Length: 128
Image 1 (cartoon, rainbow, N blue to C red):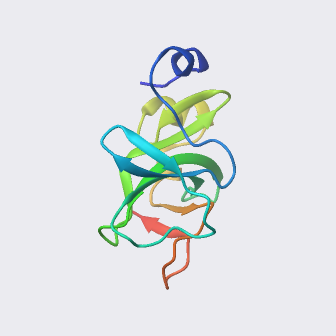
Image 2 (image 1 turned 120 degrees about the vertical axis):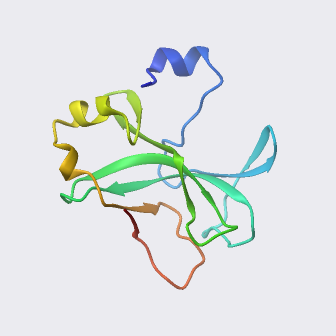
Image 3 (image 1 turned 90 degrees about the horizontal axis):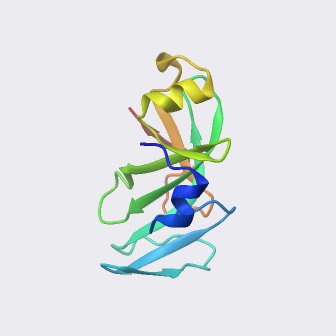
């Protein structure tokens, strides 16, 4: 289900929309702003702003969470992309329509956080 600005104003939902925005999850219902230059591989979860690069090369702003407990990093269920003020989950059919692309243009995609991971392999990272 896409989220509009009205939804964001009325519901307890938030996305990282600003460049370099990053929060570390510090409890089941709390987070703390992460102002360091890199995201450490410290076993915690981070909510970040970043970029999704579609198979066709289109770059889209995104908000998503990563976990540093595995080397998969990105938590797929948290990837949201804003289009004209509405936030879509990466796999919603409405996103394909809003972008005016074909489903085959989407996967595999690459992703990167605005704040780099403190990891020897540099972004972007591939999702299939």
